Image (tube, rainbow over all chains, first blue to last red; front, side, top):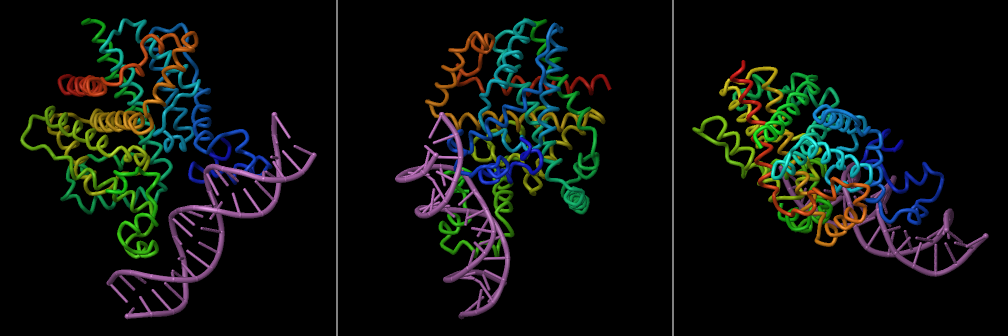
Length: 194
Length: 194
DNA sequence: ACCTGAACACCGTTCAAGT
DNA sequence: ACCTGAACACCGTTCAAGT
């Protein structure tokens, strides 16, 4: 984790990890089956920092969980590169379990239930992925280059040039919150309607 | 692209790509600066297959675009592993431009505009990422193992075991559509409200 | 302007051998 | 039960040299 936080996912190497741990690289294969296992373990490990809400009204609890989920992903931006693998570790499963329980408790039923759980998960994953991408990959130069490129081609991308998101370096949090509330409003409406 | 479609992102190698093209691996570096460039080009290339809607009411057009966006990502599941990089190719930019234009045309204004564009993009990216993850990484055995694991620990994950998504292998399309409509309803409401 | 070969500095992983 | 060294089959990339 220290290595990942310090240098990112690309630079995590079995050899470098072993060096960090003071052993030979081949020793690691006694404790772990493959490098992918290391990454799966690291990815699940960060979610231990996401508290499972208790004694809250469902919408407050879900908002809390999803918000903390996002904050944790952003705190470890290397995680974005690992989101394209199944998340089946105990920490992730426990938090998914809470999400399902909260929705069921709110009265959400199929087919809305699956759509709600997937929608919320996919939204937070997509949001964190995109933001982390920019945080990691966009030193000021890259971002400026991208913006200039778009400004130069304002005839080709008029709407992007006029309203595009690359000018606003912030607003991530607010946009996330709005989108989350649209989803939650929709989910809540299915309960009222039945 | 043929190589990626046939064997996935892990197996794309400068050496293997060169072999496919009938040259030496080092020759590629005359045409391309780095392997990342190859991946960026491949990722942007698939979006040429996403038609830009014309002459449609905004919500129908946006629904169409986002749906085709998702279908294209799923048709090339290797793309999921590449979503953690900035998408600044011409095909992606043109389609983002349409999205902004459609929302502006619908009367969506800031701060809803950025939230709407981000929310829709993040939702489709997250949805495709998660589904492609399962399509690629889940041969029947893996998925069965995951489900069994959850069933065995039904005391630890009661809600997941009772309502969990791993039992339903389908329902992806329907869940996606529901989530998308929740977002669109929310966006539409901001126009009505102002 | 484009292609080649040799070379560098790495990788993940296996496996026999040690303690 | 755990660690080591040597080795295998690869990587991305550079660079002088060719045509």
